[in-house]
Length: 159
Image (cartoon, rainbow, N blue to C red; front, side):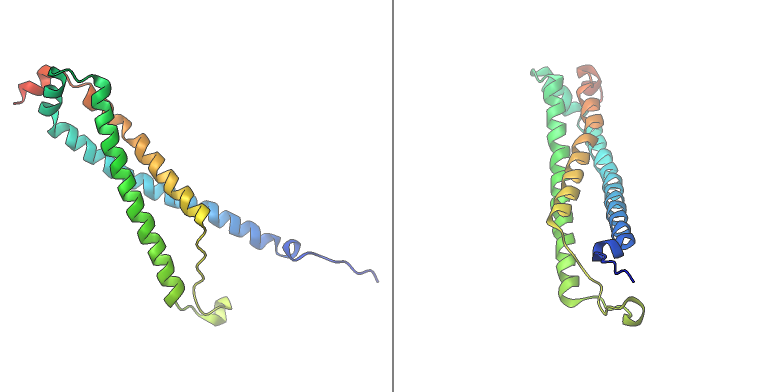
């Protein structure tokens, strides 16, 4: 008979494609979670804009341009996103190290392993953090634009 040599990657092709699909799915789920959290940034900035209409009007009367007002709110939203991302990444990495060190027991008869495996990939962490910062930067466009469009009279009228 003929002997055929097969590589272990060829033998486990379905496992690797399922693993890739899982990674893509997890990235999408994390991105959606970040998107939901970014709505919190939008609502926070919108409330700040509504509370600061008088201050915006005063800044405009002393010469601040619409672009300057937009930059102020962009920076505020960006800082909110960066702080949230740093805290989220730190807590996530800490949780991964905790699970890796202490382990979460699972039934070895079902899964052939006794602890939940943890594999922390720096590239994936950086990708999720970058997506988070990018989303938080894009999400500040609406409130910043809204703030820059307030007229001086509208802001001072509410005083």
